[in-house]
Amino acid sequence: MFFLKKFFIEKKSPYPKTHHPEYLKQVKGMLHHILDQKTSPLLEIVSKQKVKNMIDTDGASFTVPWFGQLMTGAQLMAHLIQINLWLDHYQINIID
Image 1 (cartoon, helix red, strand yellow):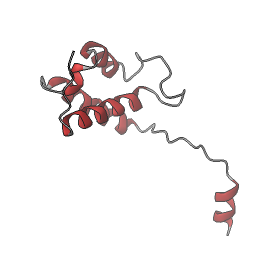
Image 2 (image 1 turned 90 degrees about the vertical axis):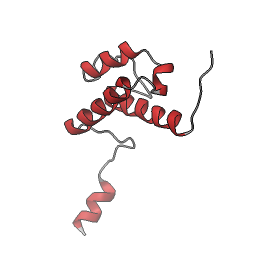
Image 3 (image 1 turned 180 degrees about the horizontal axis):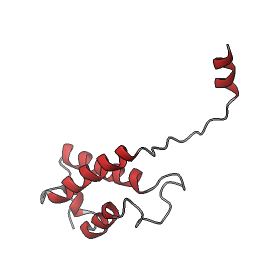
Image 4 (image 1 turned 120 degrees about the horizontal axis):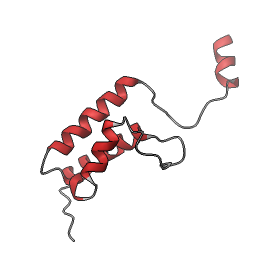
């Protein structure tokens, strides 16, 4: 009963956040791999150098709040990975 009472009374954050260092390590590795692939569709819409800088600084080079103040460099890197997967899966061609 104590658990249930604590569960319902304890204030929860409505936004998921991931602070685990392994999460950052994994998204950095995945994004680095995407940047190394010359045919990655993400390279058509982002600055490779700026993304590399974000990876090298663990996201600290990205200082503008993204999706509110709760999203940081790690979450943005994960979002870029998802965009690349979507572009690749649906074979989206970006035309100038």
